[in-house]
Amino acid sequence: MNLERFLLQLEQRHPGEPEFQQSVRDLLTSVEDRIRDDFRLEHAGIIERLAEPDRIFIFKVPWTNDQGKVIVNRAYRVQYNNALGPYKGGLRFHPQLTLGTVKMLAFEQVFKNSLTALSLGGAMGGADFDPYGKSDGELMRFCQSFMLELWNVLGPDIDIPGGDIGVGGREIGYLFGMLKKLSRRHNGTFTGKGPDWGGIGLRQEAPGYGIIYFVKSLLDQRGDSLKGKTIAVSGFGNVAHGVIAKATALGAKVVTISGPDGCIHDPEGIAGDKLDYLVEMRASNEDKVRSYSMEFPGTAYFEGEKPWKIPCDIAIPCAIQNELDHGDAKLLIANGCQLVVEGANRPCTSAALDVIESAPFTFIPGKAVNGGGVVVSTLELAQNAMKMVWTNEEVDQRLQTIMQRTYQLCGQYGKVEGGGVNYQRGANLAAFQRVAEAMIDQGTVG
Ligand code: 2IT
Image (cartoon, protein in one colour):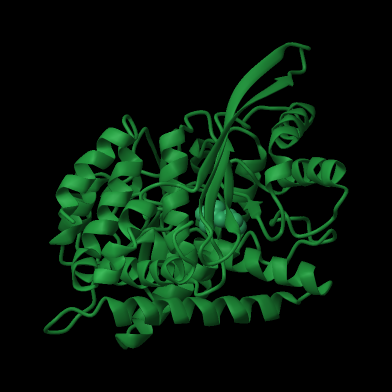
């Protein structure tokens, strides 16, 4: 097969979805020689099959606001691939969410889930609904209407949604409540549930902790550690919070966060009360970080700016896709950054990745490092199936073990001739290998 020709056709088949096209392009390009070496992959049409989601649901979500007016949103669920296990992936509520973004996230989820070495397929969904500034009643009515349409394509062995941006504990409560009402089942069809009704400890911390466990494994191997490292983080949600908490506990200093309004530089490091304040900022229903600099003297707020100009040893973008561009990548290089780690899903633009390819720092892609959320979600499912409750210590231990294994897997597949590791290639190759072999084993129907 001529990959370049196939990728051009892909652009025509998925017009107006550059994020999805780019995601597929990056993965297929990095496994190209593996495909060329193995006639079975070509013969089984694995490439063509992986470039197309299994199925997509697009649906209308009408709901009533507090003024009694009916509002209409559009929602999606992309069930991308279930060769390794049931479809699994988050739901995102974000005003700019498009089908192209959801397809990209679902595609990435397939491979991220594969890298955990657990039995999970990949999916993603959500709606162009903005949860900020909504009352509890409005959120609940939206979630109920959303689930009214989606519930009967979900199930613990079929498709298991979880949270993502804009979908946290409160939203999951309303979504799960409606799902339970309609299906008459209280089971593991949703993850991120409350700790008293089937949820698991550490679910909120898990994505951030997992990222730092991966980074720790890498630094350990180099005879280095997080002690004394300066870290720049973007975002101020769950992922950023977990990263900051764990990195700080291991001796690093995290000096930045960001929101849609701008970024904060705190040279003393974000720890203790300041870390607790992030939760308060989120609960304020504003989606802004400016108030941090007013609350804590000696910190700076840069309106409309991103944190990547602040010198750091390690940069961890934890906000949203395409938040780190080529200019930012160049700034990180100029400032002597040693490690760039994608905390969010595809935060680096394609132009940034071009710069990063020849950068002197090590780059760890999101699909390698940010699977901690979905790992703990799987522990939640196991817990639900066993009718058991695990302690936070047990969950933390298992998360560490799985992240170490993922690190080793990426290192093993990403070995570069003459020494060193290309983690981008390692992650793509290791993840692709599992999915492709499972698809071949299961015949032509998936
Ligand atoms: O980005 C992610 O891995 C998720 N949002 C996963 C959510 C989940 O637990 O299914």
